[in-house]
Image 1 (cartoon, each protein chain N blue to C red):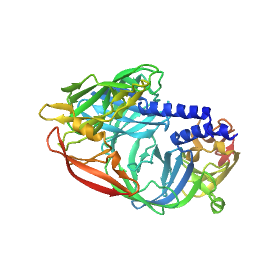
Image 2: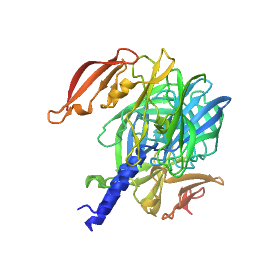
Image 3: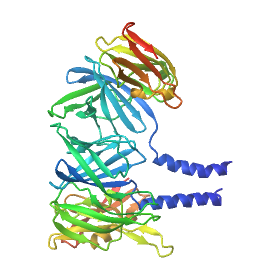
Image 4: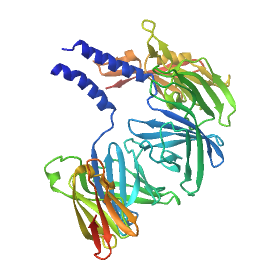
Length: 301
Length: 233
């Protein structure tokens, strides 16, 4: 029989798990500086549980993103990490001696794997997003998206002792740094480098994104995550706008996005466990603001 | 009694779900890169894959960069040069380095030239972290060590992945023959897989160590030019 203390343990576990659902799971360090003479921005994501480092490098000169290949790393050891030219092959590697989490300055080398050309790397920490709830943060974090014209940065903050960071602003620029749009007065969940989930929802060839809003439950003031909010690029307005029709669809169940602009909804109420069927509703964008049901289908399980 | 176990069990479930795997294993392969015969050793520890390989003609172990091979996209390891920099990439068609994979194929690609050669590997032996059945306990395998000298390479005979260390086999690179067995009696805490033996050139003398650490007394040997063998220090 479950006793009161067991219930307390379950409540504690649910608090831990619900708190973590609203927080980014890995500390993120942001560095700015140069490789040779080229200005770069480096994002290092420390995975304390797996003893691993991953991240991204943004070349400010070319506007090019490169993914860092997730690499085992023990705190304080030298780090040799590949910069992936494509998912299969790296084009370069970074050598960072004696790397510590949240280290202030980074001095190392950049190795071109083909030419074997070594360049000095000098970076200064410009942002740090710890996971320890006792630490606060307030900074700007690049969101990795490798293709397309735009660069996305989120402004996030968290007070000491508070679970979960808040994104209150998103900056959209062109790859050369030209401002495109500032989205302000936001209250979104901060998921580190994965705060913005990118996809071309309407199939217009320009990347869109999805975010998670923060909500306060009135009964106990608990912080919760709301239904996804979708921002789609509007050619006629030259920027991103919320798409309420898509949000309304997303509130009914999980969405699947096809590259041709077809959105498939699996309504939460459309699963028949007795018959072993799942209902799918397939929608298409007929105008910038509207989605129309094209057809339905059934999946057996 | 039962009631006090429940909270602990709940916490254990959460910890088990979030902690990395702690199993260890070694897989030994023979095969070829292009037309050159090679021997490759893959070591899995706590979710990290390490490896070494050597061309059978030269018998100098070449390090592979430690990596995670547990995602569908990740089926490659970097070959490191003596300075520890990546020089080539080994792509495997599978990351299932276990007895149920009879043949591993892939490519070896040189970073400088971009030249690729086919890679094929056939399993020669497996060292698990514990005895899976009675048969697996009867076979001893010599685990190649990552560090070597100009003249020698080293092996440790063992039945389990992290067995107690009873000996280091000193092997001649030129002939591939064993030239000496360094007898030891070290507990399994001293066993660091392919990185157990450390080789050092000190004052023009070749030294071989199993490093001393907590609960491991370690051992050191020095090459004696007169006696033409290693002597324990």
